[in-house]
Length: 211
Image 1 (cartoon, rainbow, N blue to C red):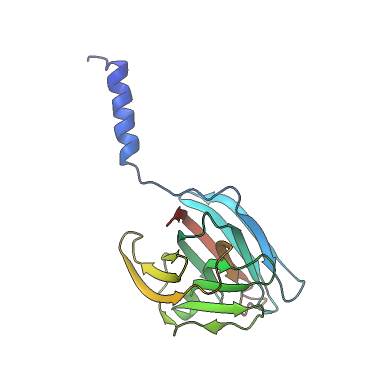
Image 2: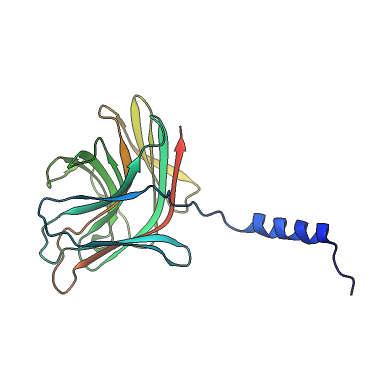
């Protein structure tokens, strides 16, 4: 059997690599931040916990105090698109997903995520307090992987969802009166109990682009 030439072998390798799915890499400068309304924080990050999973962000709140934990970074540009593919696993009403904030400590922030135990997606605004306001009525989300995207320009912020990370549906557009300074991923264990204390956010894809 003839031995393939070195040039042919290299071409085969290139073609095989090109056929593999592209996985967005989590930026190295994503940092854990905690916005606590009580000092009892229990959170952990595991990077590359399983094939196809970039990282896992776990929060434990057995007393149900409603704190939230954020893995965030400075925005890539003043106008940007940030996209995430993730899964939230929990036996309680925790929420996990995209996070956008105007500063670094107990900020005015937007939490765009899912609550799998309640089969719904929520878009929440926090105004420096633990009590959020829904920016729109919760919508149906029945478990599994979620895809969410936020696009922000100098004048507007648009929120979109997808079933596959390819085709997107815009669900809300609002004026960007308070500009985003940091964004990332977050979990909030809304009513953990000793029997079901954990809320875990598994991140499969995280991508940031200049708009």
